[in-house]
Image 1 (cartoon, protein in one colour):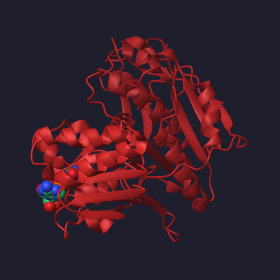
Image 2: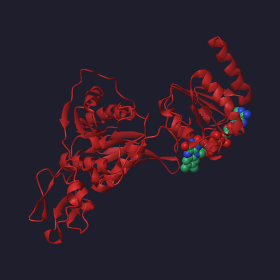
Image 3: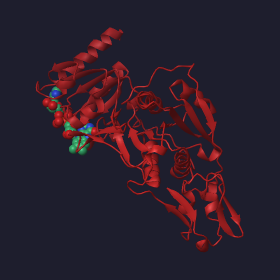
Image 4: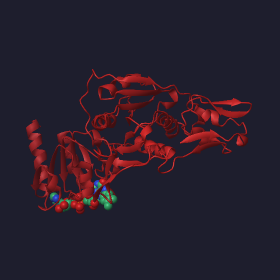
Length: 399
Ligand SMILES: Cc1cc2nc3c(=O)[nH]c(=O)nc-3n(C[C@H](O)[C@H](O)[C@H](O)COP(=O)(O)OP(=O)(O)OC[C@H]3O[C@@H](n4cnc5c(N)ncnc54)[C@H](O)[C@@H]3O)c2cc1C
């Protein structure tokens, strides 16, 4: 990708200057000129009203793939200022992939007051940490994060970029991939390196979860993938693992960002269930027969200190909010214990929970597919089994 200024078209309006996060444009005799800070991120081209800044995109076969090396993870920082679980998971997976390629793992951290997190990222496996710290980047916003990440990728040319398939990651990855004209495989469940071609094999469910598709990005770089939280495993934290920490100076003008965060309102409605973090999940399906019977699922969940999950059939029927949905179009979960009550076990549901450590299924149909993945199966009526379980657990607790 190349960027240049078509000088006769430049009207000296200076719209490009606040758009550039790297302070890489000077006005010389009323005409915009790039200085040595330019990373080629292209943010200025999108701001130029006359088309004077030209961003030339690579076409198939035009990218010199040999220029790209290293595996990058784009870090995500929680509102509490911690490293998101998916970042540690991607670092763990990244280490395995990087070993196959005999290369290094880098992580990009974008935010504000985030210096301490660099050490955490190192302990989870990063060899190199790019820290982009600026007040404007305190909370995720599409435009400045896209500009910063695109600039870094264009400058350092990583071979692989992995991003969590979280709301932030999905938004950012697609923007950046479009900007740099790279391919992007969303929602991967498996990543491997082909031993012969050394290409990243990116596997994800396709056609409603009925087939697993393995996707290659042969001609463009970096090879980009998003991965859902809880699909990969982090490696144990190693305090002695050190990383090179690289501070990236940026100069971001708030006036050039179209969106402002006015207020952050926490969802106290109780619908924001943190299924992805839960150790135990009790889920209800259509076998419950109606929304009122979710009370039984909630009672078992309360007894076990569990979160409440649901199948899509119950969400579509309006029995429970979509935030509870587990599965391909819901959340991917990896609890220690998953109790499926009145859920048949359709492939799309299994896509979100089959990697749970222990699955207990209660279903009155002995041929229900959920029993194919269950470690313990109870063939019976949930309206008899679940109350018996609640009573037994309460007795054990000494209630
Ligand atoms: C593109 C696409 C994406 C999808 N994404 C998802 C997703 O993310 N998550 C998801 O869950 N689904 C998803 N689905 C829907 C999925 O295909 C199934 O339709 C859905 O999972 C079925 O939900 P269920 O198991 O609750 O209902 P059913 O399939 O109707 O099963 C109900 C089960 O309850 C049992 N039962 C009935 N009464 C009792 C009783 N008294 N005691 C014990 N057992 C009883 C029955 O034997 C049956 O096995 C998706 C579908 C498509 C096409």
